[in-house]
Length: 593
Image (cartoon, rainbow, N blue to C red; front, side):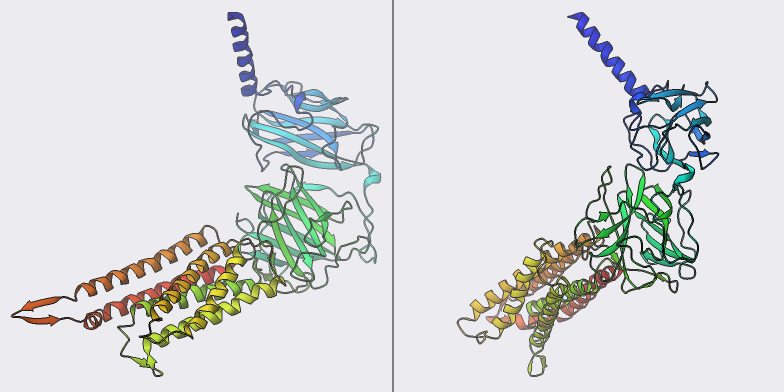
């Protein structure tokens, strides 16, 4: 039994040692396809090293000088692949310059088709030669994986693209009426982030939040700069999946000219697409974009490209010298480049614009104006008018019972005015989403169902109040109970409905700020209610009978309430101010989205 145990221990040691030490000798044929070292950690996003070549064209049999340089690194892995199919096997072969630092590897069926390190000694510079094969693809791109430390490495750093002479498309004249279809344009890596200089003066910019810096990790940025017969476009935003913008004739997704920058395993693919209804975008195989570059650093995806103002040879491409709504969206993407539906509402411009016209620096909104109005009116109704009206009816009858307004007791008139205002605001707000959606929304969860319930209770309350019995009628107690229970149920459901609505894509207030603020409002209202209940209880306790020389002195409840008038008025003033603060906070948040 000892020998198998010893063998098992030796096997575990070998596995552990191999997993820890990786490939210090550079014999990494197992990584020929993925170019990913088996180091048990994720690759870095922002390359620190660069690949350069001494030419941009080649013929079969030519030698291309390839350089890999950057801060100190321990390991590397270099290949050349078909630029149109980067997942295809390595092409061509390499010749070494310094055998002390580099060695040749055979990936697939091609001998000497890759270069790697020979040891873990730190390096700053590697030079090799690539020999173009006789069956080389039209365009070849160099890729490199670099290991700085064991768990610090970059995978498939994109290098320059070299092309055979007949692969390059002729440059069209400046004044032409048709564009030649080009299917191959080089892709490069952006060395520095975008900036907002020239926005409003030289280029048309869209920023969210307004006036944000595209170097910021929270800024969505889209710019258009006309250059003769083409437009240079920059797009940036916090996304590790994809960014996309579309030119649209309306504010709805569908029938739009779209452009996507998709993160495919730490390599960004830029493509055009056509949006058909609410279906996933149909990516186009032909490439109408030139000067494509990208950058992916610290969760911020940036890409830039150029396209002609008019592209009559490409189906689905809009002319860029017309007026459109502009939509900007972000979302998640799989390693294979499959994109998923955006979780939040796209950023949409408030009007139609011509990006080749007068340069402007504008913002946009992720929430349509009708939905913003819906949320704002509901907040006004259920944070201010209802809450104050309930407090007045519950605690201010004795205080304002001898004050009259338009022939009725003041507390009743104030209560009725606030409640009728609530009914009006809620009714107006209720119809706005139906106008926006054109019907019932199937993607809003329980929010519309609870909203309809709240609307029904809101209408039922004043109708029931119109048939209330007289003050001393036997059925008055039943009315009071039904009136209170219906109103309380409506208020509770309204708060729950607002909680659910704040996170819907059409509104999507900042999270978790919206939840905490709504919890704060509920706690504020409950605290004021409890305070006034305690105060009322203390006043009731003052009603006592004091016997002195058989003279009964009765301090009435009415006089006791009068003593608390000042206290209640102060509390009401503070409560109204507090509710106003919550309301302003919510309205400001709605205005910012």
